[in-house]
Image 1 (tube, rainbow, N blue to C red):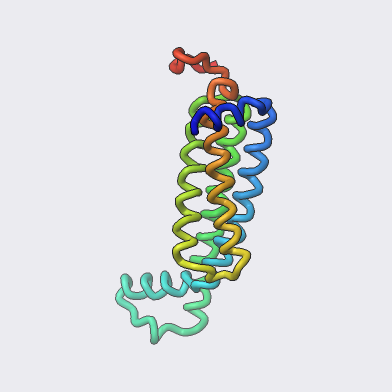
Image 2: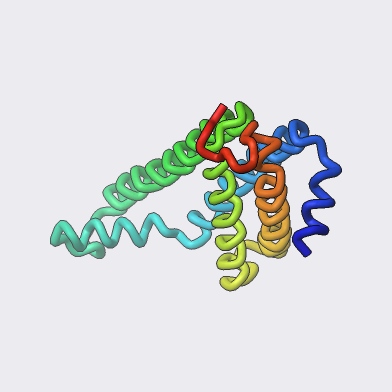
Length: 171
């Protein structure tokens, strides 16, 4: 099986594969951010956090004014959306250095593709709560992330400038 995978990726130009992988990852990150935002709003997760904040402060959530709830909810929503932005900026940092043939950035890309495949499986278990497009998207991303993982793994030497057997020397 591994020989077939190696044969498949050996037919790819490593430079173009890296560029294609980074473009695909950026597009997937943007779509993931969109769906995570929809998921956040659909599940109304910020209200759950408002209730938790109120209880930790010794307040009764039911006695808070609608204006107070709305303001705290908005702060929590903005915090989540900022978190998505930070994750995206972090990913762009690693993608940039992966394009520059840095082994440590490639390690991040490998880890990221595997964990996103697993997260897509977890979202499948929850079902199509955001509709069929969400469900189909998660099915597709499992395979896309696994494909990218295999390509990055197989083309490791060609995409980082590492000579097999001399992995500790980074160029």
